[in-house]
Image (tube, rainbow, N blue to C red; front, side):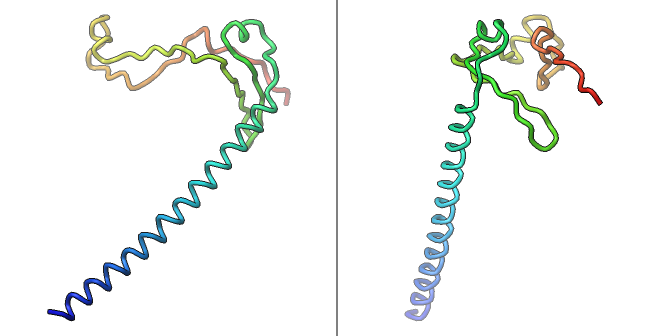
Length: 122
């Protein structure tokens, strides 16, 4: 019986050491991610410019920036206040007379929010 208890204690110690190692590396990785995102947002805030359009200012946009990454163009906007987002619950859709079979898992942009910027010369 004694050799069985000694083996069990040895395996428990071995598992504890591995769990400790995994937890420490997870902690180090999380710290690197935390610091990296902090640097990103500080750099992002430092490169924001005042909005060009008056409508954007009235909407609560405090700054905007254009970025290029991977062949794509991104418009970054910083809102000074939280925007109100209408979330439709399935029960609300049924009460409003919407199709009850439509689960509402798709979102269609409002027509007034989508605005063409222009064409790219080729």
